[in-house]
Amino acid sequence: MSNFEGMSLAYPVNTVVVKAAVNLEDHEVSVGSMWRTGNVLFRAPEFPSSSTHKMEKWARAADSQGHDYIIWVSNRPRADRLVIQRLDSYYCFEVSQADS
Image 1: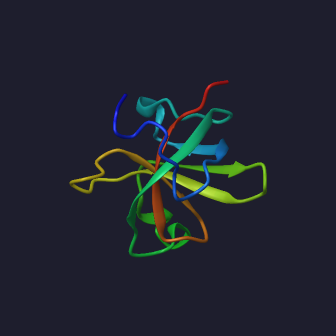
Image 2 (image 1 turned 45 degrees about the vertical axis):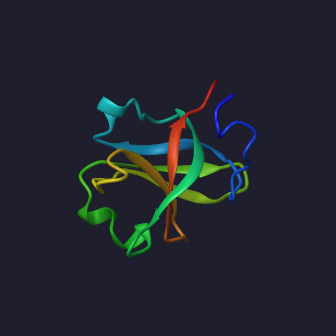
Image 3 (image 1 turned 135 degrees about the horizontal axis):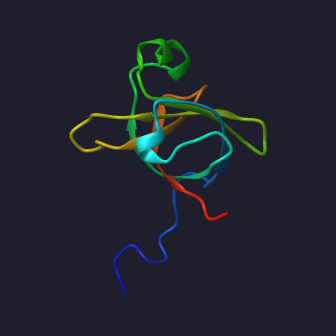
C-alpha cells in the first residue's frame, strides 16, 4: 500500500467536457473529450480569462454544475504538464483523461 492510498483530496474531483481546443492535439485534448481534476498544484498569478490570449495551447471545458475551466500547458519547474483552472479561480490542478 502506498502512502497516498486512502488519502482524500482537499478539493472536490470534477469531470469536465472539452468545448473548444486550440493546439492540444499532441496531448489528446479535443472537443468532446472528458477530463478529471486532481490535486491542487499551484496558484496562478491571474485568472485564466485574462491570459488565454497569450497562450498558444489551451482548451475550454465545463463541468455538469456549469463551471467553466481552461486546460493549459504549464511550464513551471514542478508542474511542467497540462493543468486545469476554473475561470473564476487562481488555483491550478492536476488534470487527467477521464474514463468514458
